[in-house]
Length: 391
Image (cartoon, rainbow, N blue to C red; front, side):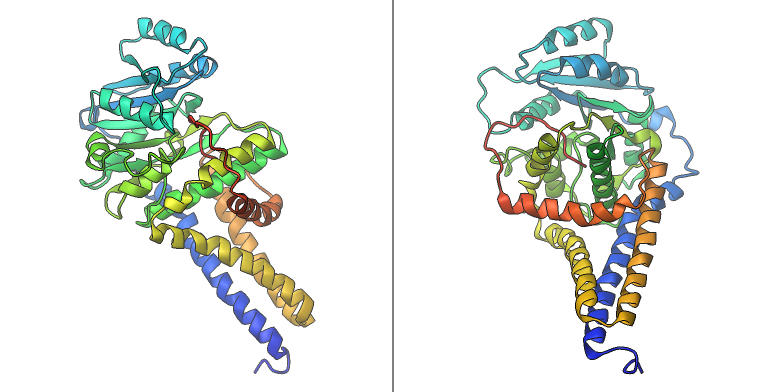
């Protein structure tokens, strides 16, 4: 019926385009809408009584963080929560970190300070610092964040712990969203889009019972889960991976919950140079080969079909007829409308930056940057402490 309108080449190319478009639609509607579905579901959730909230130990690892601790530590110590402690692990700081911590400890009874022993020779000192923090924790629930993070509100702990209360009895891990402060620069726009996209992806996949990663800026799990899986055993040879590799290791379809309410978000300091941001992404990608095979396959399908989408658009423009190109552009435009609607709706609800037509550039360029970083493998083998993931 289409022989009068399309050539055989048109039909082959449009058929392939329709296939990748179907997967792209499935990806966005199945996974990227997970945060919006969670927010709708919990919109009318009744508040949790204090007696039902678990006691929690908030762990922060710090290396040369005097400025960030001065700016943000008080936001952790002033949380509206019935029973919690904040444990800061000083990882061999050479600035005034210890002095700042001692000043805070003199004012707050729920702040505890510990440290990484001097002379400890490890590939990733943050894994050792976290292990020390977990062992020092007095409570059975662990909530992680970083020294440069500021919770959205005084209800951050309450919101994150609600994941254990509202979740099923077997919930062992709760994934939260960690955003970056907004600035009026191109780099900051790229960072915020990249962070939002990856955040919607890992939260959405966890909501769809396919958890594969989390971020140490906003992550909770049970203390017994940490020891049941022998902590970071099996990943000690990696400089990174104290958050996403651990989550990939211990999470299952049944033991993971997400929390993505506005009050559950943490905000962090973004990178301010392209070099630092690329190094940060390279660090994160350097451990992705350790993900479970199922996680790799699930993660690979979206960028693969996205790349094929643009390759097919170019091919139709070169070898296809004019009407085939019109059909292809209509399909691409419909995908763009769906993409912008889902991403910006989620960004608005999470209090983040909204995006316009620049999404098209990010949609094309960011996967190429990721591919370049994976192919070059220029990962510097130096002791890595705790640069936050670009998600």
